[in-house]
Amino acid sequence: MSKSEEFYEKLYSQLKSTNTWPNFYLFKFIIKSNTNNLELIKTIFQNIDLEINTKSSKNNKYCSVSIKAYMKSPKDIINLYKEVGVKVPDVISL
Image (cartoon, rainbow, N blue to C red; front, top):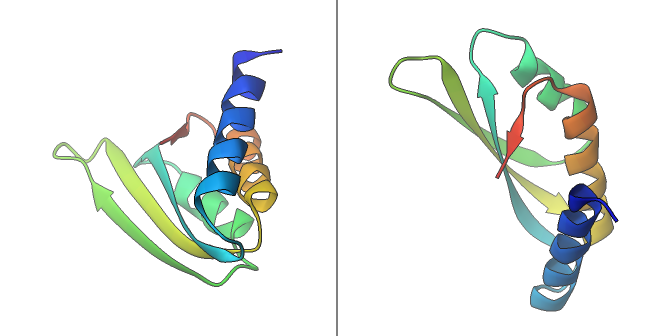
């Protein structure tokens, strides 16, 4: 099993045991500011009721993206993290 698979398995277990679903979840990402990565993330989350906040780093090189979304299940959360990881270059999930 890869480290990525282990991470998602552990996250799934934690989400399942610590919350009742559906529930709100706070996604956090760090992206490069001078790219279209924010638009890519918005596209991935386009059909979800959400609140999105961004904050630029001191030198404007990076941007922190926080997305509060009402999610149906831990599986849905994992699937979104995986999709962002595949479609958004150089993204860091927190």
